[in-house]
Length: 231
Length: 88
Image (tube, rainbow over all chains, first blue to last red; front, top):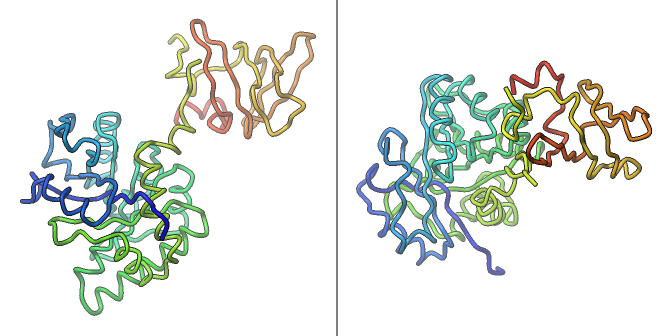
């Protein structure tokens, strides 16, 4: 495999979980990652979102935020609140209206769709098209496969397969993340690629979703197209 | 409200001086003039010799001259009826 720079865009650390950022970084470097994004739940880090990471780890870890809202107005308010303050905004999906509001918003970087959890609705072709238009990446959370069993796992894989079909059709951006809550949830890039093949992702696609796309999201490569440039 | 780079996407464009910097139609590249009309998909630009040129917004990069600065923006962001652009 030629050398790629791999990124994991959804990792949870202290204060949301017990694991300190330094510990996660140590493991991630060992696995061969070029960077991880610490996306803690916004309610937990409220008021501290502008806080910078220590300079020793600032070029490896990126600060992000994960928004879980209950209503559309709450979601919009929170996106506006964090936009520009944190480099990465991840929105966790919920019902249909919430998913639509998140995917129609170009301020969102990554959307984590629900994978068939109870009471939550999945993505449709219409929503994936919005994602492609607004350059919102769609997350494939591999932890959901690892932490589920039997019929749940089958349902999740089925949902991912369905989303992948739409992502390919509308040329949306897929990203593969570990959604790790501890160091034991982190997986090496090669393992992630192998796991992604379970729902039909080709090796090249999976490598792309772990390296080029996350790198582009972090440097806002696609979002720049919608900016008004002052000359 | 005075037009500035932050509100240009919602603002009235008629009357602004603009240049077509890049376009899928090579013929109109470099066209300079005043915006005299706007539809959902087109900007009508009056050039130096007084002719109206209809330029599609999609696939074109415009440079607008605002009172203090010049801004470059992709026409794709302007595609919508002027009265609806405010909602975007």
